[in-house]
Length: 343
Length: 288
Image (cartoon, rainbow over all chains, first blue to last red; front, side, top):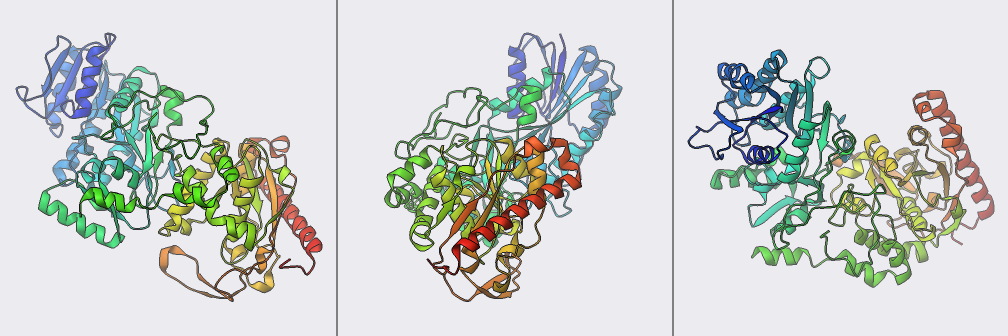
């Protein structure tokens, strides 16, 4: 049975993945790597689970991890989830964590005798979005390489490209999963933090389409990537496709359109006063132009399609979706009869 | 103000309510029967929503039925299903021609289809307009969007002349501008038939007398028309026989410039022929 090493294992997505891998009897030993000390790590005891506290920016520690416990447990797959989530924290240490650790982990994995597969969690935010770009983002969409992009985005683009440049040149099967926004607390979701306010300001005259992913679907995509013999870049879309104003309303908040020029100062003030994580400069473009990930490649090669909708307040836990039929068209419902968007 | 009160305040406007008041039941039934790839909240991936389609039908109804009194010829040529491209001449200072073709196709296709009008990039930057057009089914004119739509089997409405067509001087009316070839490349790649469309009447609706440069939203210019509103010209929309692209070209030929240019030229010639036919049958009866 193949072993799996998961970085970022104490964050919500890492924890959900580890739990799911433990439930899967076909997976061998699991090494969970997190920043917290072993006593504070929110993980449970299990005979197949080994927790390793490690700062990923520590190059020596990474070497010891890969050629120590990972070799001993015959790890075959690395799932690298350990990117810094907070958008308000910047600087060289964050860059080392986001980019340099990814590069080193990949380089060490290539030299490793048991590791065969490298699964990297990337982000839909790496794509460039403007009026001239498609609303449906395929994997070959241009990336946001602007020097004016905030570090949060630049780091993610650089880490993504670092992984992509080794595809086909390495003996590893490298899988780059570009996730739609995972709408959950503690995962670095800008939209989740944005919706924490009772009143949500949005750009006047614009209402772009957004795509939200649940933690359950994100974990399922990683598991499929870990099992399949695939390689390459895969968009991982979510089941919820709706406009920004719709997301605000469904979350029980009030959308207040204001001229776009005011949004930057307003949200900077909010961050200063309340210490929140939402940064308008990170979201400026996607608050104006639609960007929905195209998941065709993930469907064809990984067998992934989103099955879980966001549990919007007042709607209860939505049941899992059925796999979509060949024809994308859905039966029409009379205008008067519609009103619920629930499956 | 309480958040709930604000939410209620913004929801006072309901496109569904407006549409149900203004659109006759027969047309509403057609909109209900539209093929719509609902992604769970009533919207498709591009942002189209049936309620907004109904609202657009309501807003264009008076223009279509009473102001421009649109006459359609050859609607049977529009494919009933599958990917297809409507390629039309463009004119009139403001895009009422696109709205009238959209309204016409919605009324005359069986099963009903709502063509996805292709917007110039600057339109997708315009506040309000970009949102309203998108909700009614229009999309930004990037190559990726069009490929995705044809992959989904949609009917696309585009104007190969682009802005030079709609913005031409009055004395240039009914003279096709530079006919771009992107639609031919798309059609060959997807094996989608092209239906040539000629709009007669729109060229006289708003004679343009000047253009002002504007730095706003990337718009190429601000048109100054002789009249603040379109004149009540009689629209005649001619749909030609579809060009069976899949029968004549292999998808790989979308990368062969000669094949693409040949097909684009054929579409252009057919639109020109339809225009000449329309002008000959109309004579001097611009408003009748």
